[in-house]
Amino acid sequence: MRVTRGELFALPPRWLFLRLETDGGLCGWGEPIVEGRASTVATAVGELLEHVVGRDPRDVEDLFQVLYRGGFYRGGPILMSALSGIEQALWDIKARDLGLPVHALLGGRVRTRMRVYAWIGGDRPEQAAADAVARVAQGYRAVKMNATGEAGYAETPAFVAAAAARAMAVREAVGDRVDLAIDFHGRVHTALAAQLIEALAPARPMFIEEPVLPEHIEVLPELARRTTVPLATGERMYGRWGFRDLLARGGVAIVQPDVSHAGGIWETRKIAAMAEAYDVALAPHCPLGPIALAAALQVDACTPNALIQEESLGIHYHEGGELDTYLADGAWLTPTDGYVNLPDGPGLGITLDEARIRQGAQAVPGWRNPVWRLADGSVAEW
Image: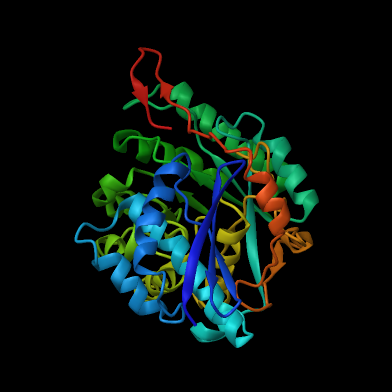
């Protein structure tokens, strides 16, 4: 069996799907994307596919090595995301060829269902409490909210108090039977992070995500020493080498590689195994589409230290497309008592509606993340 060609579909709201064809009649799907940089990643995918067309798609590890090491310059969001989507499609083909789900090839299941969480409150989380109640009614037992909007290097006591009040309003609205994660989104500078973590602790967060930018992971051990709240990070780290330093330094309780950014399914599983050796949990980042979610759930299925899975159903970024728009059957996306069943069909375990994908690709998405500014006109982290 040989790969004959790849085909890309840019889809609303902000997704890029890859379809790999083989001369054996099988095809596999992947989701290579950097949010807001679909065209750039598509170009990288096209270049990398020169090494894939004509090869046996079942040689996943060797193809990963060629794609990662064969270009001399490596790593980073664009190249690793392009590689990730290709790698997902290779696993999809390999597992479909054997009539098995991907997780069966990676050691087999360690669980039959996976806990998931949903987003609440949007970019500026004023309505988080009401959204949390609605999410619980949908079947979620864990939610995540942004801590703040724009944040400067230092902020007033009122700014910190408002963030704490929003989080406490969610806690009071849903009670103690629902977990609340709080995302700093890399918006918070290091001097402010400790103050905010302390102020948010009474809301008893499940974890605080990206308390500082990935460029500043050296402060995580000190932040961790000053709080009992678990700290999580990793969505903007790439490959196991990007996580090696993080884990060796300490301070992180939960790693969050993205299966569409960090290097694909097998690379995410390797990162999880490294984290397990440090007694650190896995919570894959995934505010993306259905292929990325299916790939993440394949990792979750066979990973003992997988804690919870991000799911983008109803996320505030979705305009013009929803998580189930391009699925033949999306009923499994809705959780029951906080859990979804793991996709157990062959390959990634999902069936895509190819006709709808081809139709949707006629409307090329132009999503870009916003550029925020502070009151003085200077650029703020989004």
